[in-house]
Length: 178
Image 1: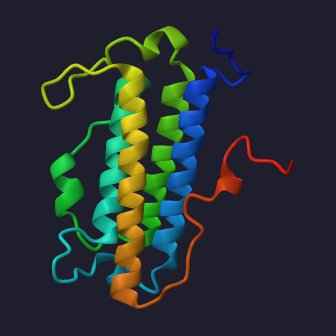
Image 2: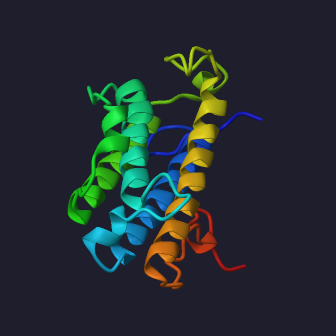
């Protein structure tokens, strides 16, 4: 069955991937905003290697690279080491980086044709060649994994158990009442 194109560009599959990733990035933003102060975003707990801030920087850099630089040809230059070494970045800057990642995902996927999904992703991943469609799904899973870590980190270091409604079904592009 052939995929159809939407007016905004891309295939149904790429638009679904973009919708899920942007939904989850909005949830990461809500997580960062739910920390009571800047210090708690960066606080480490025993046995936890990365803070919520570190994971937010990592996700923003990862998505701006793979969707923006590689697929969208934005010219973004990733500094992966800095994603894990920078500290005390303001929540305002973290949210701005997450917004930039949303734009990179939406713009990068808008130009991906159905025929590209089964072809090799334009960049080697850890020295391997992978299919574009599979890599896009991997990136969505990677984001969801770290979103869960950020949620647990926030709860662990703050003692606040309130949810930010991460991964809400109601935020899916096709969600509607029957």
